[in-house]
Image (cartoon, rainbow, N blue to C red):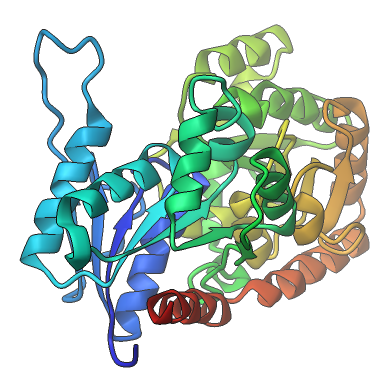
Length: 377
């Protein structure tokens, strides 16, 4: 199918990677002339500024005493069916298998022959955590088998999907992408930095949704090791269930007054260029979008050597990777980098250079080509 497409992107509205990638993809597709409908239960945190070819559709969630848990999957399927009847949707693009791909399948069953194609993009925890739960394994596998095309954000995740769900069909890797103009070292601003750091102190940062898989308390533990050797402060961007535990650990280690908690309603493209180092000591990362955003801003990364991170962070060039939980080694290496201006400058340049391999145009083009291949059957 040639010409502009009409795509409905189904995503979570949070700061996590799947929501960011989905909304940024929508904006980029609109710039290429396609019409995009973004569907979620709340306006996504990172949804693009108003664009004539991007529309947001909020899914109303029923509150009724009979339901202990509101049936969002059904509400979403109903919303998608209504949208497809109002608009000529070519592709339903579900970011996350549960519940989005399931809702897309139900929508297709309601519409019959007039239903659009379904593309499911897997981001990680929908497979490595939720999908493997006994309560969701069969429905996750079913939703993948019923999708017309499946993509994953790293080779690591694509292998996991095929192995864990015994899939014979193809899972195509399309890496997460970055807008190299928006996320750039040139956005470094002394006025913004002065709000985050004290004088000439090193500025270390972390961005996530503060879930346990991010091991956010380890960010504080690594920072505490850094602060023993180098004058530094820590910027925490995001929010989530582990925030109270993070503050407790910071208080116990005596560094709470060295940490600036900024919450999730922040412009990462403005904040990340001000950092000197980015920490991502996660238990698991299928890709590591926050690390890519930092690298694009010329910020070296100290992270766990897990999942898709080795596909992103070139060891010794864009940063360094360590075993999960190696907070002492992470902290010592980080302090050494911050104390060595020449090494820090080398890693800054290497981080930006590596980020250029994930430029937006090329990878959005891969999604566009994938849609067209699915539509051709």
